Amino acid sequence: MVNFGNSWDNVLKGEFDKPYYQQLRKFLLKEYSTCTVYPGMYDIFNAMKYTPYEKVRAVIIGQDPYHGEGQAHGLCFSVKKGVMPPPSLQNIFKEIKSDTGIDNTGKHGELTRWAESGVLLLNAVLTVRAGQAGSHRGKGWEILTDRIIEKLNERSEPVVFLLWGAYAKSKQSLITAPQHLVLTAAHPSPLSAYNGFFGCRHFSKANEFLRSLGLPEIDWNIE
Image (tube, rainbow, N blue to C red):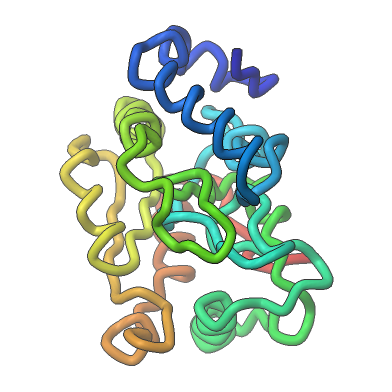
């Protein structure tokens, strides 16, 4: 049984008893026992563990975890301290500096502080085989993470959704309630960042929206 230790336990009550998740669980037990899988088993649900349902102020949606050793730890775009920030994350930091003046470059790539301050860093797929990007897609994770997005859409308190790249934008159909703000841009990958991620100013726009409603802003510092 999955246990987040916070309000997500009640929000997602019964979800882990459904046939799709039971099938996914069997698949994962086999994968973790026969292959190298990232993140570690105890880090899979860190996004929800660090950011309880009622504390979510912004959501960043990624696709699946980094598949290199020591990188993924359950928060999209984030790597553990001591691991070189990947190119997409370096570009995120560049945009934050350009947009807000906050300089995270040259520090580390661990975004735990964002998660603890209300940014749900949610990958659509929560696990991956080492060295095999996308290897756990279509196994059931997307059903669960779509449900998480739907549950946030049901919240009366507004949430900012930051959707970068075609895959994240495909989740926009799940966000229907008018109180939320949806911001879309190109993916921060070096392959696409110059097609509209740089200059999107999502970080200041998110805070302008929250401030206009009298809600606490997000501190985009990572430490």
